[in-house]
Every structure is written in C-alpha cells, then in structure tokens.
Image 1 (cartoon, helix red, strand yellow):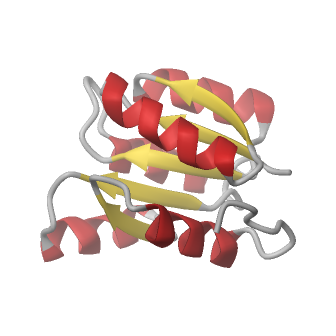
Image 2 (spheres, rainbow, N blue to C red):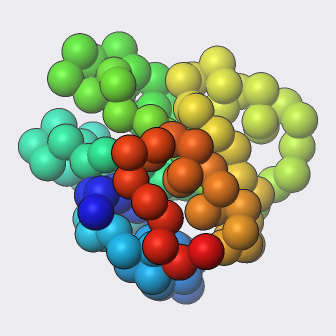
Length: 127
C-alpha cells in the first residue's frame, strides 16, 4: 500500500481522486493548495503525488519544480492533473518535472495505469 498525496483545490475533484486512490488500496494524504502540499510532501514523504496544475496562489507546476529541486522530495513521482487538454500544458508539466500528465475529469483506467507505471512495487488493486 502506497501513500498518495493529492493536491487539489476543487472539492469534487478531490473527492473523486481520493475515492479512486483508496479503491486502489492506497492511503490518501490531501492538500488544497501548493504550499500545504509542499509541507506535507516534505514531512510525510508520500510514494506518489497527484498535483493539480491550476491551484490558488502558487500553481502546481511551480510546486512540482520546487519538489524536484529538493533532495528530500526529488525522487517522488508526480502526476500532473489538468482540466485543459493542451499540448503546451503537457509540455510545461514535463519541464517542471512531472512524471505523467492526466486530463480531468479523472478516468480510473488512465489513473491506475499511470500509478502502476510509477509505483511498480505496488499492485494497483482497483483495476
């Protein structure tokens, strides 16, 4: 079972992501903004982070770039979550250090496939 940090400011999106992660057999940590997400990531060392791109204050890509520059969090895989299916958004997520990019609304097959790829030692139960 992995610890998955979800950084998402929209309550409906947080609820769906949390449900999908729990159904896959993992523990959920949650944050509603990038600053809180950074604090939780550094303190709790999650196995994976689902990072909304559009967050209030600091955006998710800036937060990811900070995580990837910090030796204590650099190895944590990050999946960018975006409401926009734009090539530029996807490219910017790669530049920031994201390991995968998923367009919302979340589809469980796509999320579980990315989780399986980024958490190879952890079976994704909910498939």
